[in-house]
Length: 581
Image (cartoon, helix red, strand yellow):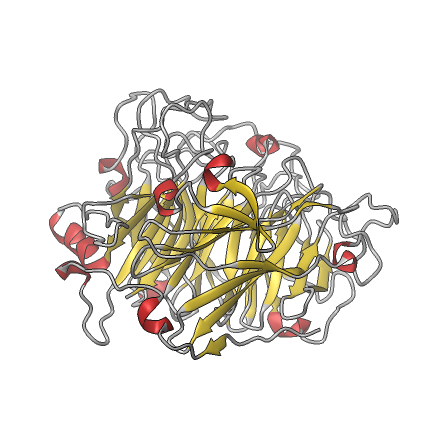
């Protein structure tokens, strides 16, 4: 059945005034009517717990900077100070520890019945992979990617306090039973879609708001779940956590419904295996889909989810039905794998393909960009591989991996700047006008730019002062210096957002000990890079770095194709979000 697309507005006496308190703010945060000020939120994957042996397994740091402080940093060089999350939210009190924001004494519930466990009893509350702002710019999701953990939360953007916390469904999908790679808001903020990567399930949290757009409930709707693997079985239901947050306010949330066996079944509407090797022995045409770990379900303005897959191929879902339903399907040779960048411009969905996050990615090189017309899926389900995507760009030196059938079998040049010939397309954003699409190359420290009308491609770098090779860029001065063998001025750009006024791009910059995709993302200036857009958005230059730092974490790991860093800096900023105030 069709699911209600718009938010549910409830009038509850006292909700708007008593559910959440308004925190005291500083002068820097005070907002006049129609003010264009905003906050920059960085997601740091490093451990916020000392003494651990592994990277990115417990905790994480939320870095929040005010745009006025950023402008002062650019103009005067005075570093912007991160805001805290204690209710005062003062500059200099940050960053915020995930394990403080979500207290360990929160009680676990299964379909609203207590399990007898607390959050502190459970593993994997860590690896803050990314946060995104809802369409109302009131809330942010919190995606904790430790494999086997599988937690997704919601924060109030103004007060910086936890609103809800869930744990994804455990299945027999692949390896660890569950993990939350990312989650994405729908077009009007009435739902949050969870990419349960290892569980191979797209899941939906229905959001209930009052007339002031405050979230008053969040329902993990098990009936909405859509499986994309083969032979799928639910091993453990989704969970919700209740109790007092760090501000002494009650969390909201519930788990409801029942998993629909038909939505977890093996076949697509065309009768092909969702994932190669299912019981029907009927793999999809043009390469099939070898490994359906969900990477990023990109949500369109029509609430279609473009589900990118680790091993290649694409599944398109209607997210407004319950359960969610497939309306498009592509083999890996048609749309190659491991893409995460995705944006919409003029009714077209832009998607990319990059290198695998698994160890196999260490010898892969991929930079590919496609577009699909979103309107073409409104009368679905469509036949397999239809409509054909537009291949905007495919690097001629891509390796023959993740569905690509041409090129060399591997590229063994590693990831050292100036030496490697590998590429890895990842983050993607459109300018405010929608005219230009900027896509990061994590290995080459470049931005590839596509004109959304003509498809013309240009590029600029993040290492020079002007983006065109002249002078030294801002990453050099912000680089880690406690290991002389670590290359400096190595931004390693990842996910991207744009400022509300269209003046800047904000890019997550990785650290010397990258927690994820270590074979493509070692960098020297962890934090959020500030790119000043030029030529009406067609080009840019890195003008500053909002520097993040973590010397509490002590875990060490080898870095494939890079330098086995031995210093103390463990910060690894993977995601960035912008919240208008």
